[in-house]
Image (cartoon, rainbow, N blue to C red; front, side):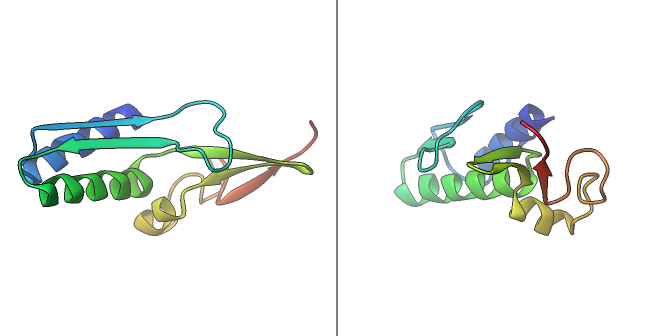
Amino acid sequence: MARRRLAAILREARAAHSLRRLAVVHRLGTVLAGEASVFVAASAVHRADAMEACRYVIDEIKASVPIWKKEVYDDGEVWKENREFLDRTGGTTPAAKGGCCCGSKVRVQGS
């Protein structure tokens, strides 16, 4: 589901901006605090097109790609959805309703 949405975001950005190349990578697995988890690259004849495409891609990823993160702390772990995703959907995702995943944050017991 996330891959399909990422591909759609790239198509939308290409349609809206005069780009030569556009790429996005979203890291999987452990990402330490302060490390980049998303890489967006765009090239265009005009810098403004490349910059706007990058802004669009990152904003759309945060708001429309169903990505949940497990944050690990000294005293436990929580699963977290992007705030932008909940804002865009009005908090109506299955997770926000207490269904599929985890609501906004869920503390993991044990471990």
